[in-house]
Image (cartoon, rainbow, N blue to C red; front, side, top):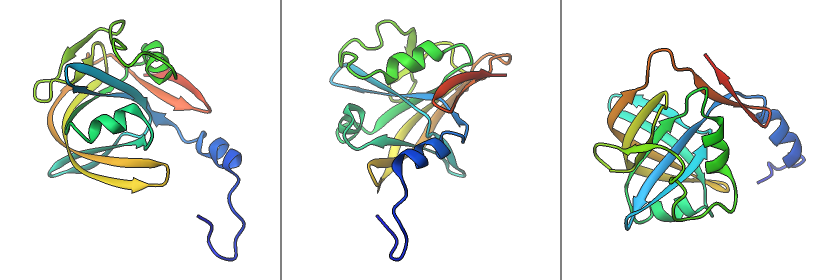
Length: 168
């Protein structure tokens, strides 16, 4: 959408500029009909402490977005500083729909049963409270039903300038 009287923002310039905004890297998972689906995101944010709410954005054409129309329980694993390989794998196009978590150690979240990635810095178990259209993405807001933290010395993974980097 262009504001009247202004030129449209160049998509490549926007992507490069927003790439300078460090963003935490996480994996969102959901289980539908016994199959675990996962994707890497860098758009997780805390929305509210009372009640506890978390949000993430997902491309409207993604497999995960389709699954969220049928299943309202999902989980977030905030990736640790040494989990760049997990982030890359679950962001890679063409990965199989079935068995994509076979190579990623995980456990089941206590409420939704969606996978929590082992060794992560933190975990959230959520239920969809609202979905808001936002351009080519949807913003998914969830009630946080359970939360856990990883080992105290574990750092986080940050996306900056098109790369993931560990921080402590």
